Amino acid sequence: MRPFTIVRTILLALSALVFLTSQLTALASTQAEADMTTKLSTGTGSLAFRLLARLAAAHPATNLLISPTSLASALTLAYNGAGGKTASEMANALGLTGLSLDEVDRAKATLTKDLEAADPSVQLISANALWVRNGIRLQPTFSTQAKKYFRSQVSNLDFADPNSVSVINKWVAEQTKEKIKSIISSLDASALLVLTNAVYFKGAWTKPFEVGATQENGEFKLAGGASLKIAMMRRSGQFAYAEDENVQALEMPYGNGQIVMYILLPKAKTDFQKFLIGLTLESFKKTIAKLDFRDGEVTLPRFSISYENELSKDFKSLGMPAAFDPHEADFKAMANVPSSFFIGQILHKAIMNVNEAGTEAAAATAVVMAGCAYHQPEKPFVMNVDHPFVLAIGEKDTKEILFLAAVVKPEKLAAPK
Image (tube, rainbow, N blue to C red; front, side, top):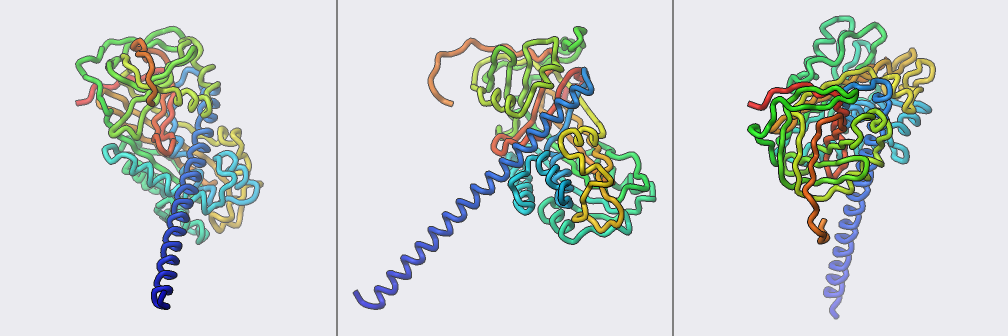
């Protein structure tokens, strides 16, 4: 073989080896990234069900609606500024243990991007903003990370001016298409920084309910035994459905089917609070894993629910008390503040409307610093959602839970125009 031919052969072999190595590296990187986003979604989901159980215990017979993804976004942004015991507690509560801060931020950015691109036929928007009191200087690294990975805008405001509240609330209203018009009512002298997140979702059912099939004067049985007159939508067809001795479960897709609503309807109509308190991410996933397509009929209220609360006490009890302690909190990596710097409030507000056409939901959070095997055809099921139930809206690939609700007393909602 001529020397030139030998050299060319060697170069071609090296090129092929470099190409193969780069492809394997990219594949490994993609898998590692997917593993990290799954870890984030799992952490968010676990925290969400623990929070729901705590809220259910504290507020029985009350509609509950939270956006796990909104809460996690705001708190993960705050986590970027935490250190020491504060950071370790927040990592445990948010399910971030075992990941470096850079891995958390990259996974969060990827997760947000994947969620927003999951289905072009639905609207899903997540936005973050940092509002900084005049005179407070953010640490450069924290500011850079917030802008790069959380796409956060950063604005300085005169918190002593009551108009600052209007500025923040106007931003929330714009991001949520006016569904949530305010998240904060005032900023006292101790407020130095406000981290906000807003989430907006609007999706049409893949197969909508027919308005003509809705029973306008239907009946929904309340947990205490009384009943409520409300419009009940009805649809027959094939659904992803499962049931056992305790619960009926249903999947209702939007758009191309990537984002879905899950409904869990306990068979016992009298002790919904017990059902809620016992519900975990693991039991939820176990139930959802049993879903299989079956013919059936579904009756579902046309309803609206909303919820708002200050959640500091709840997050303290969920494993991150140091973040709220003026003497223990360590947020030196967030801002250059000479005095104690801690989380003063976690404000959360959410709203959801469900009708024959689909679902519209929005949430805002403000962290104030202070198959296919053959089987015999089954009998068509009937799922009459006429008593308190749990619903979740989530994306199927990332497993991210966007909204989680306990519907105890649905509020009347007009039919879509």
